[in-house]
Length: 87
Image 1 (tube, rainbow, N blue to C red):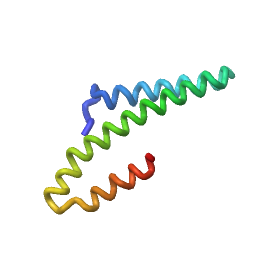
Image 2 (cartoon, rainbow, N blue to C red):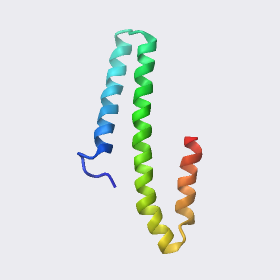
Image 3 (cartoon, rainbow, N blue to C red):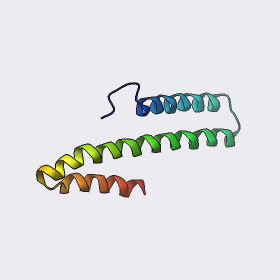
Image 4 (cartoon, rainbow, N blue to C red):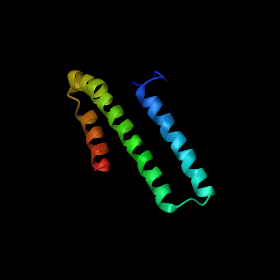
């Protein structure tokens, strides 16, 4: 998985963390609501990209392995449940 702290997943999560800190500062400073909302939407976008990358790697690794070893029904159901929640 993404254990390398220099991977795009870690970098994007650190960016998202910085954006959340910035959003908190914006609220503390009573900044314009639309500007705050735009920052929230940008953070959500980054988190969606990270989630997609993690799911992609999970399917290429864990799910593929489960299918080869035992049919993978449980692993596929886990992925489908995440996709249902995502949609």
